[in-house]
Image 1 (spheres, rainbow, N blue to C red):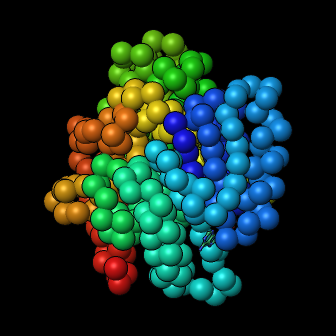
Image 2: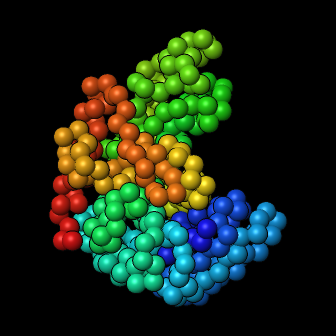
Length: 310
Ligand code: ADP
């Protein structure tokens, strides 16, 4: 599989690095308006790959995307001092207008994997601008928040995060919803498992995990300026599900017909992912509080995306 990455900054390069080491793609091509940066990232990453895989890593202009099966969009501008969220969104919408048009001029029917933030809104924008089926425009959404959630639960229970089945739904951001009520460890309900191993999930512990998941990005940004390895790993996981037609269930963002009564909203739900993109949306059973949280998250995203001229 050939994967294009538009935006060779921190997030794009971390995704390319994770993908190249895993050997999931046969070829990765970086494109950036800063050509020297794309070239340098490709060259640097291509020196790490021979230790792990045979993935070819190159860079070029948009024409180099010819033959790509998927394109990761990680291009964007960052917030200027004093700039409102909406003004930033409008500038990033303009970036996507250029980027999506340029990608589609070369690749007629790609899967677009959106990484630029705020990812739910940018996925909404890319869906509208591209005219591609919703199932083929996938935002990384809460894939990373879900991984953080599972990892903190797993650490507390003393089990692998991969044996924890729990999802973060809604916005990738402040209004996201950690769904405790349907979480399981192996095949056992989380609370029952926690009792069995003598590590109960007290209200205080749940609040602390909620706080840590919700504020992880702020904490990392405080320490090192931005976050990229985590999301790079998450993007590589989504590419693998598609490249290997896994029908894996991952929490990702796509435009969805109805979520808690809100129509045509772009946010994360667990979805079945394979070669054609999103094959199926899942609507998990939630308790009343989680359901209300998801409705509020959907409403906020719907309002914000409605303010953009698309
Ligand atoms: P992040 O941490 O989100 O990766 P960066 O600023 O490191 O943020 O990377 C964003 C990248 O997007 C930069 O390398 C920038 O040159 C690129 N970019 C911005 N606008 C465009 C555009 N119109 N076309 C291509 N690349 C773009």
